[in-house]
Length: 381
Image (cartoon, rainbow, N blue to C red):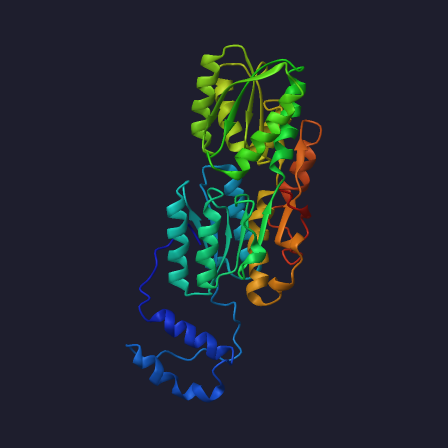
């Protein structure tokens, strides 16, 4: 299923859907089955056939992937992971990818529209909130709509899934650590001396801020390296290319560009290539998307922090799916499964090929039932 479909008229269909679902679960009792035509007719229109008692309760559930933009290769892989999971549960025609394009209000509108289309309780979500402040609004929407959901990356430190019924889990990588890893690789490539530029994501984004902290921690130990320009490119490769062009023009002696993700690093790399300075300006990113890993192998990038975006896109839906189906008792989950880190790896020329072979080549070949397989530990604050 492709990106965002508009909601259909649900003036009565949502109530009817809820009635049928409750009947299918036996909550109203078999004795009410004979009254169904009368009840449905009261809603207006012709009575619809009864849902078969004992039918699969997951057969009508829609799957929502809410991310920023497919112009970012990381989110393109996340989308693929969601579709891979949907196919594994025979729901390939029931997944919607909602693209916010960095607009927090649009992210909520699109989620609300999908819920209106399916009916309350009939959608599961895997969400990357645009900014930390958006997570609470998303949680309130899903709670009021009885929709199980999983978030990644962005939320306030004092906001936790275990305080909600339908917020199953929040997952992230250690952003500070990833920011440090690629910064250390860049500093080493520069022999500990020179000027660098820093390209960040959205201004209020948790991941961007955490990764920047990692960069600053490394630079505190290497006073010979100086950040001479720092700009936000909002996770957009094209905008990052323009930012990098400005950096290269303003600082002809620039020796490195640290980018908060691979999409922006690849945009910066285009600017460096256009100047013919690939061997003089080192570029690092974070995410481990295929284009960046191949650039590392080719010597065009110094390194990246490898994240399995396909895994993240599918695993979030798998967790929410198991909660919705009843296979997972959310209330009894340990806190280390409510908020957790997933694995990452610093990728350089030495190990990039192995990542390509074992992670990127594993597209579509995953055990989505082992839902905690990639958990490395609880999130630290």
